[in-house]
Amino acid sequence: MQEILFTALVVTAIASALAAVLTLADRTVGNYGQVQMTINNDKQFTVEGGKTLLSTLIGQKVFIPSACGGKGSCGYCKVKVHDGGGPVLATEKPMLTEEELANDVRISCQIKVKQDIQIEIPEELFNVKEYDTTVERVEQLTKTIKLLRFNLGEETISFKPGQYVQLKAPAYEGNDEEVYRAYSVASSVNDPNHLELLIGYTGGIATTYVHQHLKEGDEVNINGPYGDFHYQEDDGGPIIMAAAGTGMAPILSILQYMADHEIQREAIFFFGARTMEDLFLSEKMKEFEEKLNFRYVPALSREESAEWTGIKGRVPVAIDQFIKDGAPYSAYLCGSPQMIDSIRESLKEHGVPEEKIYYDEF
Ligand SMILES: Cc1cc2nc3c(=O)[nH]c(=O)nc-3n(C[C@H](O)[C@H](O)[C@H](O)COP(=O)(O)OP(=O)(O)OC[C@H]3O[C@@H](n4cnc5c(N)ncnc54)[C@H](O)[C@@H]3O)c2cc1C
Ligand code: FES
Image (tube, rainbow, N blue to C red; front, top):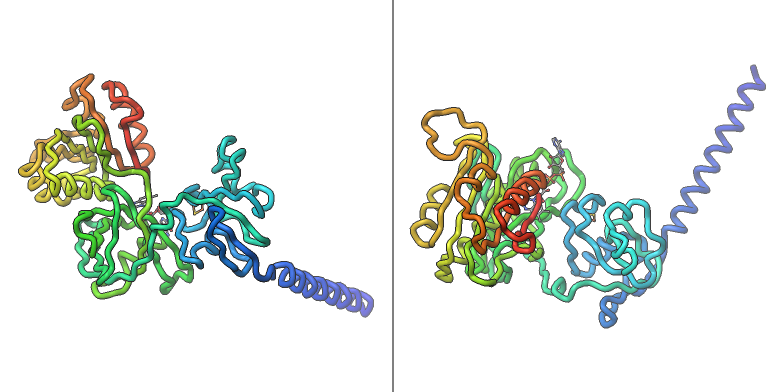
């Protein structure tokens, strides 16, 4: 019996000693000291090693799109790392194409800065700024969607209609993680002291913060703008817009831009929802119909009531009814990947060229 106890004690002692050595090794190896980060060959920062490249850049007020907040699932935080990035990690590979791998593209939230590093980012990201805003208004649009209006105070933001910003959700009771999430701007580019966002409740980290904790007068940190999805000053042909839920946000900003600039190109907006309860800002849509050469077409997939005399079915059903084959359309789509896939297919069948279909998936 004594022998068993002695053996158990020896095993425990060895295990504890090993754990202490491992902790020490981790601390020593994890301490990379100060390293040089060079961006686009001309900007140099001395930074503390050990954090992810994305966090290190945020620490220097250089903001990279990071829609999933660094979870390694969105693939938005790509930067070129020409030197010092170490081998490509298994967590990066699913988000990188062969061409990107050959061109030094890396997933910045996955790699750690451990040594001097040389990176390249699009110049426009240096225009991304951080804003300390105050919540001016919160409006419940549907059971799950809120419109939030943020006041930027003396600051102004310059963005293109359709682009998005990132909102920082701080830690709150029940969540100790601070995260950034992407939200399309719903307001006008001509109101640069304010930002309006439509935020839908999903039960996730940021939307729980917005829907259950955030109130008028609170301060919120926002950075941006980001994104290639925006209104194009192209051939001036007719426009098809399609969205569901909070996907209406960038469309609103585009319509507001068209109204502000008296752009009278023909435009039709298909809005997909389940029932009449899911419709919102219908009065605003009427105002656009009065001001612009514009038609608003909500399509309800699950409305049983006889009160609803509009389109019954999904957006492609409405597209079949309203779109003239062969007209020189361009299209702006915003919604879930499944919805966008089905609408793209439907538009292609009606002869809208792939390169004139712009979309943001979320
Ligand atoms: C370019 C772009 C623009 C966007 N614009 C908008 C916009 O205008 N409006 C908008 O509302 N969103 C927008 N999004 C989506 C937004 O960025 C977030 O992904 C979304 O708000 C969810 O964030 P979250 O932190 O609440 O969810 P996360 O915590 O990131 O969770 C991700 C998903 O997991 C599920 N989930 C997580 N935890 C739970 C739980 N406890 N219970 C149930 N489900 C759970 C939810 O479905 C959730 O959507 C945009 C995304 C992109 C990429
Ligand atoms: S921030 Fe989403 S993959 Fe890096």
